[in-house]
Image (cartoon, rainbow over all chains, first blue to last red):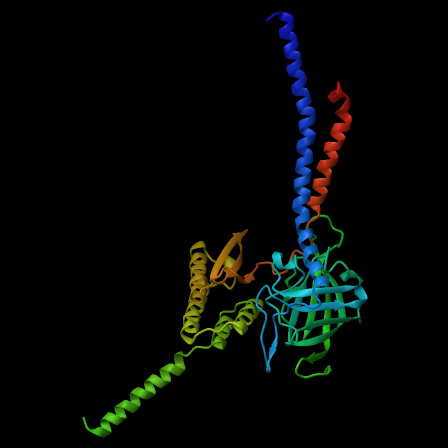
Length: 216
Length: 172
């Protein structure tokens, strides 16, 4: 091979390498970006799937039912209620338990808290970008309805607070029938939000399926 | 042995058997009381109560579980601590073994993950379904973290910018 053709061959190799770098780097960046968005969007897609099911079915498939006078309690992971706060356009299913998988489907009830209708603290949590994105619109004095298969429970918002994300007082038991709802705060925080937006409501009325009208 | 003595002996035996049955016939309420006596946090006790509302525990199983709870309390008492995190590694292991064997009585599996000295426990039943979870921080992190979205869009933007800047070099 002559000196000139060797030089041409080297130049071509260099050019191929340069084009490879110039195309390879953005291609890698693009693929990495798509992968990240897909992973991040998976949770949103899953939540959208569950939310769409609300429009397909007329009623929730609640597992907790009343058999004679004995309540049958929901098991961990089962949907058993619907939360409605009309002033903030919040309507969402409530599940027993509050792990990551449950929170993708709707609102989760902390299993270490009491069920609606029992004396004590019923603690609900939900994502700030889905079921509880409007929790910040709720005001003191407004009505919160928690409807289960065994009864309807009406609460009145009595307190709104912002607490540290490690403040265990949010989930602590209480003596009276109270509903505690919380989500991450600030609502538009990028990353793991450090605080919690906590709305507390006290029970003001309830109607059990077997009892008929609301009792104050 | 005359008849009177035989009848008396049988009566005494019946009384002993009867009273031991009443003494050892532990109930689900006794499990909850044992947890309270062991100074288990109230939210954990409520989790146990909620589980027991939907799941029956036989008397002998309840007794076995109570024995494990008492063993666990003895470990804490002997170490003179009230918080599990203050225990030595050997004591922690013994406590975890107790928790696991208490779960085995009910065919429950305790999967324990530790990080930074705190423990998260996932309890599953024989079918692998999650029965409950015990978290060191019981306040949830709610809300998908949008940082991955932002990162993804940043990478795609960087790819586009790289191509725009170097398009002439690529074309050349």
